[in-house]
Structures are given as structure tokens and as C-alpha cells.
Image (cartoon, rainbow over all chains, first blue to last red; front, side):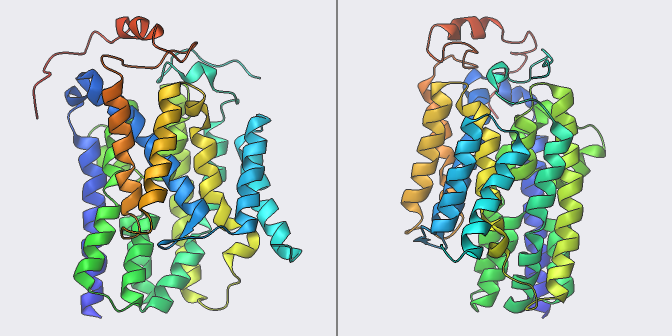
Length: 105
Length: 267
């Protein structure tokens, strides 16, 4: 139990330190155009990766769950129709939930 | 659509398709994602953590992927040291987010320590989707507050009710994360070809390495797509607002702030 507490607290401390480190980097580092461009593109790359990984994999395996794929499809359709954010989310979750409830997927 | 303010954080923002509702979007995302705290609380307790340990992780670490990773290793009886290292490594991407958010949020003094706690995927996504600094700050605050409260209450609920809660999948909650992240970077994808290539590259790298790397590492590796994008656009600061191609870069370069340069010093 003590071991787990240590793991919990060290994990929390480490995660917090990483968050703070990013904020604390002197902004003049971003004066370089390339560094600034990198900092701008990082969230795009990471969030796209996160979205793809959460949508198409489970653990270390590809997991093409039909309901989840349909939900992502609904989100993309909503985005193409310029729906507000909330509608995109509800469309995605609602589609997946409805298909599962209906036992289709 | 309502008029947009012109004080852009990101010059490409004007092509964003949707009205700006930082607080509403932040609260919506906070509630929707925060509910997943139920799943974390339940998973943590069934992995062998106590209720208080699960809650401590949510209160202090407050970064879902790392929390799930640690619980997963504990559940599988893996080494606590490796589990802790992996969870912290997973949290390293928040550092990259912080680098980007610092210039927009500009937290000062003790506020910086509180702001740091909130630097995660969801707050970054909402913040960067805003067209001006004021909306960005409001979006960050709304998302952080709502998600923090919901995530922690849900963790406690999940830990106490472990085993009695239905699957979050029944409500389609597993699609909320990926759909929200896609929706939030959508305006940036429409902003320029580099953004689209970087997003596709990042997704491809992460998917391609998922089978061979420990969970979580592929997403961090996706940052190399951003590195390639930054190196491939020499001297370019921002993509243009109008045509996504090269000519407008020069224009953007001219708009580089006067505050640049004081110390281009190496770290």
C-alpha cells in the first residue's frame, strides 16, 4: 500500500512538473520563428494523434469498433455542416450510443 | 454568424468556421470528458488503488492518460517504478502544450502555479480554438474549472461505486474524446496545408507505432510531425489566412512582432 502511495505521489509530482516546465520556459525561446512554428504545430500533431488513437485503437491493438467509427463519422459530417461544437459531440456520442442500444453495433 | 473580434492570437483563425463560444464550449467539454472520471475511479479501485489514492491522482496529477496508465500497470502487477515512469512520460506532452499556452495565457506570479495544473489536452484544445486572447483565456478557465470539478467528483463516484456503474460505452462516451479533439483542431486544419499534413502525419505516426510501442508513447512521438512541419517551412511564422500556400508567408513574416529578437540566445 505504501508503495502505491509513493507511485501515486511521484506520478502526480512528475506530471505537475512537466506542466509547469512548459509554462515556465522563457518566451524568448519562442523568438526563433522555427521554434515558434514548432510550438504552434505541436498541439495539432498531438491532438490529431490522440483523436486517431482513441478512435481506432484499444491498448496496443487496432480496434475498429463499428459504433465508435459511426460516431466519428457523425462528428465529421456535423463538422462539414459547420455545426457548433456541442452538436458535434452530441452527434458523435448519440450515434454510438443509439447503435449500441439498438444492438446494431 | 456573430462577428468575430480581430485581435487574433493566431492569424489563421479568421477562417475558423464556427461562432466563438469559449465558455459554453469549455463547459460542455468539461462535463462530457469529466464524466469519464467515473471510468477512471472504477478502474483505479478495481486495479488495487484505494479510493483515496484514486482521488489523490485526480486532484494532484489531473491528466487522464497518465492516471489510467498507472492504474493499468498496478492492475497488471507490473513494476511500480516502470508504471510511474511511464505515467510521467505520458504527461510530458503537457509540457509542449504549456510552451504554446504560456504566450497566450501569460499567467503571472502565483497564478502560474494554478494555471500549470490545468495544462492538459482539453484545455489546450479549447484555448487554441479561440480567435483572440480574451476568449482564449475565458475558454481555458471555463474548461479547466468545469473539467477539474467534474473529473474529481466523477473519480470519487466511480471509486465508491466501482462495479455498479454501467459501461460508459453504452452512452457513447468513448467517442467524446476523439470527436472533441477533432472538432477543436478542425479550424486549424482549414487554416493551411501545413496544418493538415502535420495532423495527418501525427495521426499516421501514432497509429503506425501503436502496436510496437508502450501505450501513450505513440502520441508523444507524433510531435515529430510538428517538428518536420516547422523545419519544412523555413522562415515561415504563420500560414496565411487566405491561400494556404507559400506566397503569403512573406506577408506573415513582416507581421512578426517587434518584441522578437531580444535574445535569440540558445537555451
